[in-house]
Length: 360
Image (cartoon, rainbow, N blue to C red; front, top):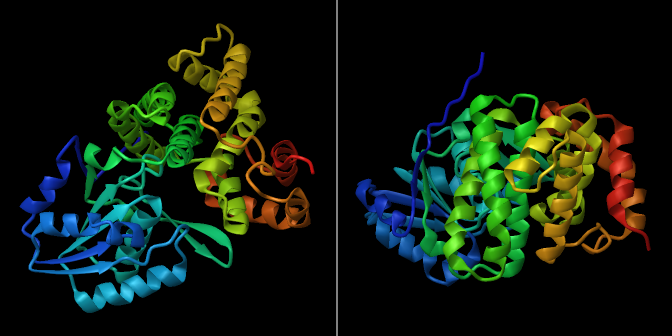
């Protein structure tokens, strides 16, 4: 039996933000980062909501910690809002979702992603960091009630952010498509998300703003897929490495994904080949399709100016191997391993580390 559920109302297109003004909120609690607080975007959102009272929690940092979410929860409970809004990338949305979870509230949560990557606006995942390890928090209550995909927020994205977050979309789609819990409906979203993002990312990176809503919606579709199907070894390793070495999550996915595909190909090569064909990479035989998918991702990685190895990403290989046992243990404990299409063992993690680390 397959099961697919999504409680999130999705509004997309230019001006989608205006919907928040129809909700009749009286007390708004807005979670964002210092950048959006300073550039006036947080205030614009608050003005759109038209609440009588607003509190802005603008302390969100990349890879939000458990302690930060706890601080936000205390302020949230003291303010007692009737609408919670997250404005920003995955970190802001994850922090807001964690605040809602810890506060045990039924207050409506609206997520406004300003980057096209995490898919957090529709997922039941939130990633928090504790003691330099990223921990996925997974619960159905974490799915936002409203997702605002407003193309007006996508006009001035830095190229590095387009590249990093774009590869996060691709990794979400690829891992969801082959995940242990994948089904007919999640496959539809994952395949279309991969096809759409793979085709549009070069143009978005080159400055063509008219394609950015396409990537934005691909991110949401990938989120819809993986929140049902699960993820896999790429994300498990990305979580462990990201917590230790503070490399952006999407950048780590770009480094790891081709190697993870190689690791899983003997079990789900036919599905990888289907993604290759959907993206126009060809491959009449499954083995050729897998090779084309892997090579296509490597070419795109170069085209988007992303590093090929951890060394190129600024991570000292000696430090990786000094902490290799810690990396392996954190990876194997990560719940994303549970939905990898094949069982994950320590030697596989080490083999992938050897491929992606680089040499001094």
